[in-house]
Length: 142
Image (cartoon, rainbow, N blue to C red; front, side, top):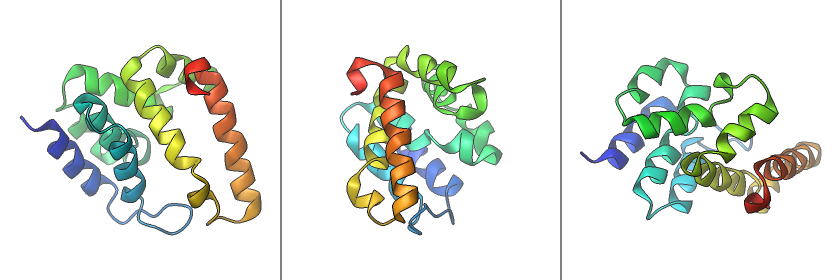
């Protein structure tokens, strides 16, 4: 089964019509995260799905069609399944698949090209958020 193609199609359906903070189609972010982990099929599947549970809960049942390791990593990446920030990042740090995708996600979100498209206050707030996230994920994230 081509899990990457299935994940890409699900992400496209789930994120259809969504836009990011700069007004661009949200699926562009998801595609860039998937590109950052290309070559690791499981990570690429998780990258395509990494925001589905959190941002598109109506598609959660479709994530259950993927293998258990993929489902688990996607669940870890969803803040909907975590009691607090420290617990959220600890769960991700303990799962190599989720960690690889989260680092790619942060790298894309913290890209200065993207941040420069935002107002200064939002960009600075997000820079701080991503610095804090890297710190909580441990030394491999810095």
